[in-house]
Length: 132
Ligand code: THU
Image (cartoon, rainbow, N blue to C red; front, top):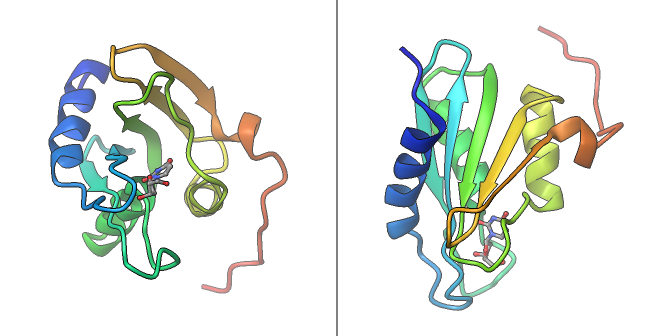
C-alpha cells in the first residue's frame, strides 16, 4: 500500500527534525518513494567547510540506494520557509540519474504545496551511457 502525500509529509517532517544545520538554521526534510512503495527519508547535513554540506534530497536518495532501491516515483521536500523550496541544481542532477521525470512536491511552513516534474525544472540533464 502506498502512502498518501500527507503521510509522506509527516515522514519528511520527522527527518527534518534531525537536520544538522547549525550554520544556516535552514532545516530540510525529504521523503522519496520507490516504484514499489517503499519510503526513504533524508535531512540536510551541514559542515564547517560549507562545501561538504549535503542536502536532504540527496541524502534520501543515497539512503534508498544503500538499501537496494533505485527506481523512484516521487519526492516530498519540506521546509519551514515562506515558500515551498525546489531542489538545488546538484540535487536535481542526482534525481535525474534515477528518474528524469520524477514528481516533486515541495511544502512550506504553512503546508502550501508546489508540484512539478523534474523534467520541467531540469530539462536535458547530463547523462552518460550506462555500462551494466
Ligand atoms: N538545502 C537542502 O537540504 N535542500 C534544498 O533543496 C535546498 C538547500 C540545505 C543545504 C543547506 O544545509 C541549507 O539547506 C541552506 O542552503
